[in-house]
Image (cartoon, rainbow, N blue to C red; front, side, top):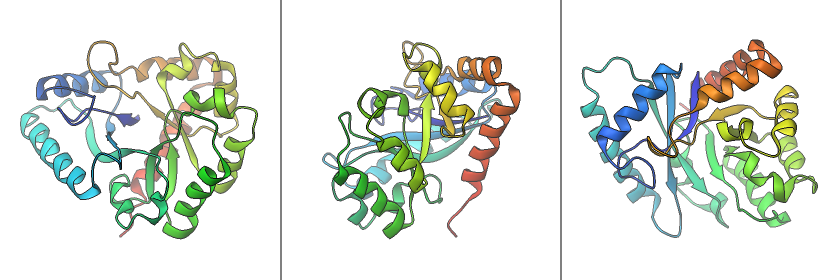
Length: 236
């Protein structure tokens, strides 16, 4: 299985604070059946440029890879970013460099407020003008704001992809709604959003069990197949 949302790079953001902790997170993920993990460090346009972010990301990636030499039982690491939504992002010249592993897919953290028509149009512009397919991170966190206003349905109709964290199937008040969305193929990808080995450690195994118990193992296989299609869709 693939973990599409993680903060494993050491001392890159509010995720793992050391190479040792990052290595433990990877080993722990591998034991629960994760063979590929997408590293999605936070990117905030008001705090960093894309170029400087990517330089730092590469340094942390190389540091981690060096420490993993000789360690076999860890997932393959794929580079991406969790891009905080910002006005004008579709016009940012280098925005495509934040897509996942040379694909056209980008993980985006949407605003934690009711989305306006301007917000929706910005996402639409990413798709139509830049050829980028947004993956909306931890969609369960937005349901409080967006559940009844039709904005999520509008974005789904545009071809946006939805990702949930494990917590959506553990302690979320919308768990039943989320399972229905998974069953209707409206939620597409899973992520742990792991940050450390204490209070936000890898936990996708709990999501696997919840989905299998309620919707069957075939649903989990379909999610895995969809994720692998995304990662193989390179923009060459």
